[in-house]
Length: 364
Image 1 (cartoon, rainbow, N blue to C red):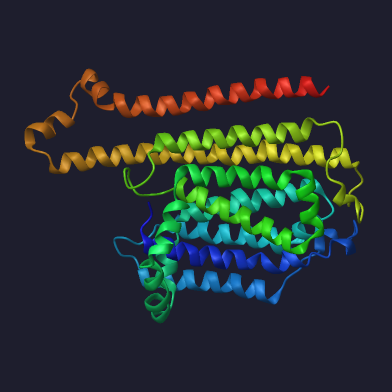
Image 2 (cartoon, rainbow, N blue to C red):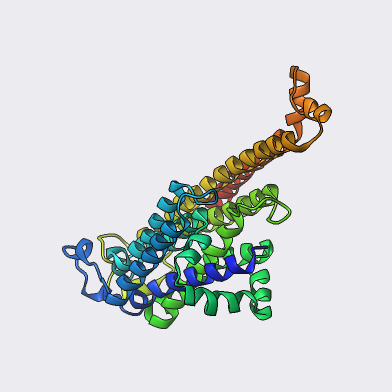
C-alpha cells in the first residue's frame, strides 16, 4: 500500500488533472466544425491553461528543491511526467476534443489518451515526491499533513490501492462508457461527458500506480501479479475492440445529431473506432507488460547485489557462481518467473486471436 503522504500528493495531482477536463467537457462546440476548420479548432480555455501551467510550475519547483541529491528522480522521470500532463492537455483542448463529438473513432483516440497514455506516463514518473516538494510550505503543513493523518482518507487510499479494485475500476471505465445508451447520453449531456472523462483519468491513474509501483514486494504488489493484471486487461481490451470492429450495424446514434464529420458511413466510423480500441489500446498495455518485466529483472539484480553486501564471507562466496551449473542454480527461480510471464503473454495473445476469429465468424 502507498504511504499516506504519497497518496495525498497523488490526490492533489489527480485533482489538478481532473480540473483540466472540466471546461472542454462542458463546452465542445463540435456543431461548429467543418472539414476545413476541424484541424485548427483549438478550444483553449483560460482556466485549463492556468491549471496545466500551475501543475508544471509546482513540479518544476519540486525539481529545484529536490536538487541532485541521492534520492532525486532521474531526468527521464521528469520528462515522462511533463509529456503525460501535455498528453492529457492535448486530449482535452486540441481539435481532438471537438472532433470527438462528431467522430466515434477520434473519440476513441481521445479515450486512449485519457485512460492509458497520459496516466501511464504520469504513473511511470512517480511524481508524488516532486509535486509535494514543489508545494508551498503552508500547504504541506496545513493540507498534506492533515490529509495524511486522516483515518477516513487512509481507508479510501487502501481501498483504491487494492489490486482487484483498481483492475475492476480500470476495466469498468473501458466497458461502461461504451454501452450505446450511456455513450450516446454522455455525448448529449455535458455533465455526464465530464464525468466520463474524469472517471477514465482516475481509473488509469490508480491502475498504473499499482503497475509501476517502485517499492519492493511485499510493500507493493508482486511482479507476477502485475503481469496477470495486465494480461487480463489486454484480453478485455482486445475483446471489446474486436466486437466493436467486427459488428455489422451502427450502435451510436448521437454522432449523427450534427452529422459525422468525415465522409464515411456510421458503421465504418464505429468499426475504425473498434480497431483503435483493439490495436493501439492493446499495444499500450503490452508496452506496460514489457516495462514491468524490465523492472522485475532490475529488481532481481539489485536484490542479488544487496545480498552480496551484507551476508557473511562464506555465503557471499556462494553468491558469486564460478561454474555454469552454479550460475544456473542462482538465476533459475527469477528466470522461471520471467519465462512464465512471457509464456502467459504468448498464450493469451493466441487465445485472443482464436477468440477474435470465433467472434468474427459468429457475426457473419
